[in-house]
Image (cartoon, rainbow, N blue to C red; front, side, top):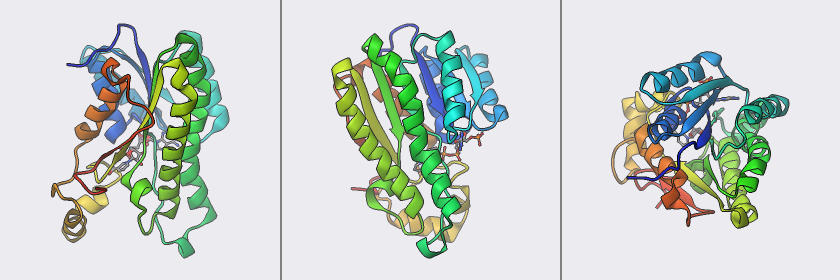
Length: 250
Ligand code: NAP
């Protein structure tokens, strides 16, 4: 049983599908009002509608998290309606895999911008009111690739490792205001991002050789950890990286 004070508001990026959707739904079940952000209006709209249909409170906002001006405009709009967003979950992410010599500048930049720089944009805007209210939770969804590295993912591993550095630094900068900043590092979780691997028997058998628990993760495995880190009970945890990966990064 976790504690969430009444009238908490959260913003979850990449809430249209997969892990972000599960986190948004899980926070909403705790009574939190959730602002669901994704690139397409349809996907964040569907998540918000599902939350409302289940009796929760949510709204949807289509924002390209890689676009500084778009994030700035969205935050202005959000903060006009909500004096503070208490919980920020930076989850939106993409992959554009390839070995280094074949990786284009576009693939490098898109992955860094969407996974890493977006965290800087959202945090910069939303943490200021959090500091004034002297309570906040920031959870960054990184990856085991950012801890261990992964051949074919130079852009993604660099972005995810960057999120870990950002997490630890902001944990130090915001600690005096009772804002905790933590990272969750999923292993292989069954979502649209991994369908290609999970549905290929040969590839999935190879991946599972490296997973001591011998199964792919479910989105709820990540949502449970993220929700705990946003609760009152997690108030003494900051600057940490939690690998939720079936033991892969041990
Ligand atoms: P997913 O199913 O592909 O969903 C990604 C979500 O991010 C979608 O809602 C998408 O919006 C949104 N998004 C992508 N680019 C965006 C942009 N520029 N602006 C706004 N929203 C954007 O991914 P997932 O598997 O749930 O992954 C979620 C996070 O976990 C990512 O950061 C990923 O790197 C990380 N992760 C995943 C795994 C895994 O095994 N699945 C493992 C480690 C880490 P639309 O719905 O509009 O397309």
